[in-house]
Amino acid sequence: MASKRKQPRAPLLTQVEAQGKTAVTLGRTSDIGVGGLLIETPETLAEGATVVVRFFVPPGSTALEAAGRVVRCQPGKSMAIAFLGLPEGHRRKILDYVRRVQGDSAENLPLEPEAGQPQQRRSTRIPRRVAVVLSWQDQEGHPRQEAAETQRLSRNGAMLLAFNEFTPGSLVRMLVPDTGQEGLTRVVWTAAAEVPGRIYLGVEVMGQENLWGIDFPRDWPLEAETPRIARRRSTRLPRRMDVVLNWVDEYGRVREEEGHTRMLSRHGAAVTLLVTFPVRQRFRFGVPKMEREVEAHVVWARPNEVPGRSDLGVEFLGADNFWGILFPPDPGSPLKH
Image 1 (cartoon, one colour):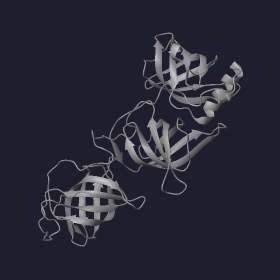
Image 2 (cartoon, rainbow, N blue to C red; image 1 turned 60 degrees about the vertical axis):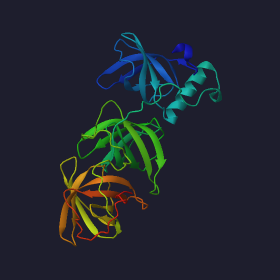
Image 3 (cartoon, rainbow, N blue to C red; image 1 turned 45 degrees about the vertical axis):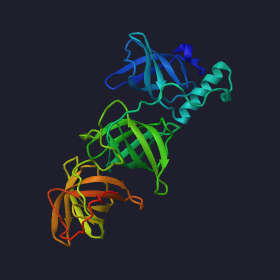
């Protein structure tokens, strides 16, 4: 690694803590740069391990906290940690320290670390709104807190709708009040939300999997295509009807949501709601005006043109022509978006 290093580093002797998934090690740094640091410790972690490191950079008196990965290890002696995206304030403090020690100008030092790009974790993502509480320290070290809401979940993270904007690499503690579970997360991306004054955050949970306690299905896409189930075909008719969906969520709570249809077919409907579901989610589909209910599931999902709403393709299970309408035959028109 030393022969390939392109980023200026400076010697630094200070205590550092590295928290892994199952262990916490204490050691001391020997040098540091915006790409990472070297920890001398007899309690080394395996190469590839994701960690959260806490350390001090002179002359600051507040500990810096950053996500990293072990990229080189000498068992029982030392391990090299590559930062996984530094918050801007942390990066600047390290650059200033290196500049003071080496006498270089900040303009001659790289702006971003090259080593240790975030691991591409892959797991099914499902649309789900869950209230969370975010806690973090601002640039002055003051504790901050805000309520946010998830938009999508995965085994290793979430997409959040929040008020405060964070720089990628920021570490934020996230509490899920419904379950009492709490975990440390790293912001991996940000984007402006359709709602004025709100921000979308992509966060990765550090050091643990499945903070949500949900049994995530395998290989279901987030923006789902119609799965190859029974290839039912019938003409679609534009028709608006009020509907009610009932289901049990992953926490065992009975949920109910009202919406309306946009299209009808002999075997299903296109529905607009304020919530969305993963593909194959099952529920009771009711039409109050008709006083009818049927078991159904989702075959596709996409955002509606109105922010905050979703369109779903719903297929009825075990019902032929639930609507009681004489649909004209059209074998070439499958129900799809």
